[in-house]
Structures are given as C-alpha cells and as structure tokens.
Length: 210
Image (cartoon, rainbow, N blue to C red; front, side):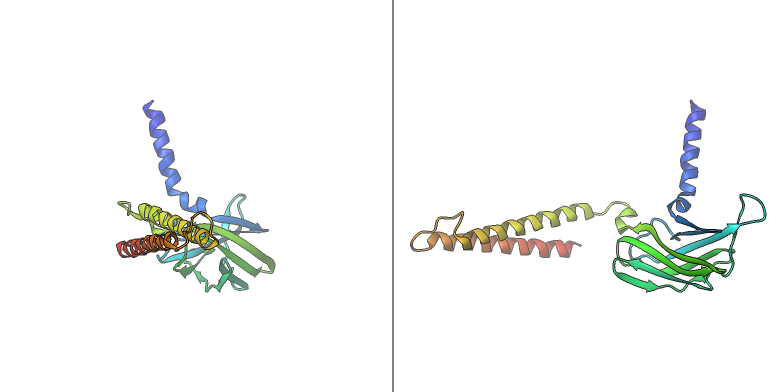
C-alpha cells in the first residue's frame, strides 16, 4: 500500500514538473514541429510574461528532434486578442530552436498566435490558440474578497434591472392604481428614487472597498 501511495505522489509531482509543456500547443508543418505557449503558466493579467516558441525538425537519429536555427528569418508573428492584433518582435533563446517575445497581458481571456511565412522554403500559415490569461485570483493567497464582491455586483445589477422594470410599469400605467389626485403615483416615484439612491450609495461603497 505504501509503495502504491508513494508511486501516486511521484506521478503527481512529475505531472506538475511538466505541466508547462502540456499547456503549450503544437502544430506540425512537415517536416517541422511548431510549439507555442506562455513562458510562465498560468498566465496572469498584468504580469510580465513571454510568448515562447519551440521549432524543431527530425534529427539524424530516429525519434530525436533538433532545434531549427534562424527559424523566424522569413516568418511574421502576430498576437491576437478578439479584434486586436500586434506584430511581435521575436528574439532567440540561447538554446537552438527556442524563441520568445516579451509581453504583459492586459486582459483576461483567449489569445492566439498567427504565424505566416516560410521556414527554409516550407510555407507556414498557422493560427494557434494558446492558454487563456487568468485573473490574479488564480494566484491569490490568502484568497481575497473578490468572490463576494462579484456577488455584490450581481445583486446590484439585479436591483437596477428590477427598478427599470418598475419604472416602465408605472409609466405605462400597469401594476399600480393611480388615484385621481396622483398621490399613489407620487409615492411610487418617491419610493423608487430612494431605492435608486440606495443602489448608488452601495456602488460607491463597493468601489471604495476595492
């Protein structure tokens, strides 16, 4: 039983060591393999990182890959986020076949890398999805009150939506009985105004807390 437990722990540990490579995306453009990902994973918004590239080809020995030198001589690399793009300056790592481009991701969500051109005459046109950028909450310790703040924001949105519906009902004359002197209408508007003011104060308090 102890041997099984130790083996399981060792497996988890080894998985942790190689998690970075598993998170990268690899495409094949014969005879080359192009691997793209983040230098630091998980990528976190607002923190400096790198787009990293590993370009290899079959070596002299079967099953052995070797890095391709000067692979980006005739390649253009573009980072994409939604409809926003940026052409990257790609530098060479001391290790053959390894390349990088510095970046500070400013938004959470999905990023992709477009690689166009050729490697030693072999055409390349690949759009490669990489790991999503996370909020700082993924690394926070101890956890912050972000989750409760999110709930507060959701509650405030619901309250505003409810107020909008009630105002619409009053304007249309449904959902409220208006007396001949308009007193009920005035009280309804007053009540909604007070509720709206309370929501505004809650929003201000929430912003100050953050």
